[in-house]
Length: 226
Image (spheres, one colour):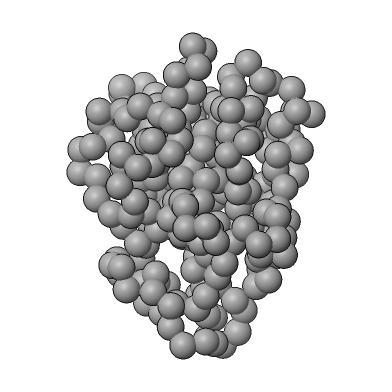
C-alpha cells in the first residue's frame, strides 16, 4: 500500500521534469509538506487530447463520477494493479483518466512492536513518479471534487519490508501512460510492475511520522538503524 507521502520539491521543477504546464489554481495555498495522508491534496499530471500536459491538484482518495455520496466512498487512496482495469470504482479512470503523481518520498512501516517507519526515495535523487488515476465528481448542490488514487502492485526487491508497493513509472513510460488515445488494458497493465532493483533506497525515520498532525523536514531525515 501507499498511504503517506512527502512532497516538498519546487513546483517549477516538478512541472519541468514532467513537461507540464501548471494549473493556476495549484498555486493557491501550496506549500512543502513532509507528511501527507489520504484526503489531503496531492499533485498529478494529466494530458488532454492535444497532447498538452497540466500539473494540477487532486484530493487523495478517488471518488468515481457515478457516486451519489463522496463520503460513502472509502479506502480508495490506492488501487490494486491486479483489479484496477475491472473494478467499477476505478475502471473508467483507468481507461480514460490516467495521471502521473510526483512525490519526493513515501513512507512504509515495518512490522514489529512498535512498527518502524521507513522513508523511500529514488537512488538518483529525482522525485518518484507514481502511476495514478483521476476522477471528476459533481454533486447535485454544485459541489465539485477532483480526486485521485495511486496504483499499487506486488513488492519488488527495493521494498523488503512490505508485500505491496506503489507503481513507480520511469520516464520512458510516461508518454504511453498519459496518452488518452491508449485505452487497451493489454497495453497498460504491463507498466504496472514492481520497480527494478536499485531504483529506490530506504532508511528508518522517526516514529513521529505516524501522527498526521506532525509535519516538517525532520520527518524525512534518517535516524539510527532499526
